[in-house]
Figure 1 (spheres, helix red, strand yellow):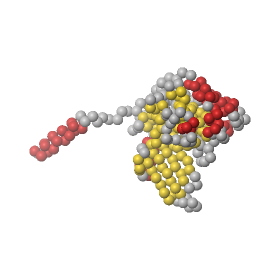
Figure 2: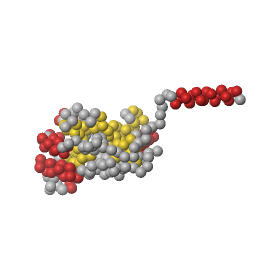
Figure 3: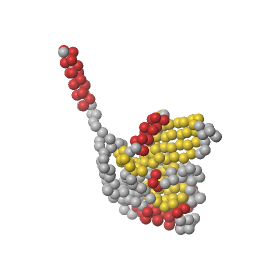
Figure 4: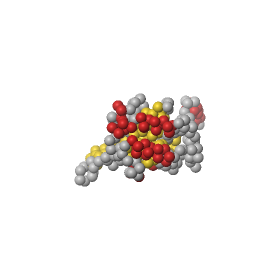
Length: 270
């Protein structure tokens, strides 16, 4: 009995120490996302930027941009410009532009040359490949509300995909590589001969990759679908040249679907 009493005292002391160590239960993720008001005149800011820099766009993407849309990826109330290139592989390359303190910056591009063509103050080393506006999903995960995308591409010999989470830092859109998978295949048989995984930028394995991806792929999706305009929807209206490009952008502004405080989820994340 004496030993049992001592054990209970020790357990009580340890419990008290843990309780006072600053550890606390994770903060519950709210069921509703509330956004600030958009920056005044944000549409005109993007139009003016694209009009003034059309020659740069034409030089970087001589085949033209395949699609344009607007999505509030960092949930700050003001949407980012999402521009798809024409794409020479499985998925299209995506270029992202953000309006920061009244100025438009390129924050991500699949072209290295974009860093020299535009102000690179906020340019991320993370880029995105996908073929649909709807690929950008708004979810409430255990880590909080966010947009994310399963960015992927490949060839006959290789394939890669990466979960990219979007956020904000000092008013600028940020891209974070959650997890990354790269596979190489044997020609003819298609057997995997090499594989590489990272989670949070560090080396991992297939199980670690999938666990990190599941946070987003199995999170509670809001059902929000972004919209935009693709060049091939109306080749005559969006023909080559400045006027066709600007017409496509204006139509994309009309197609923009804002996020409102009615985007809610019925049950909390477990």
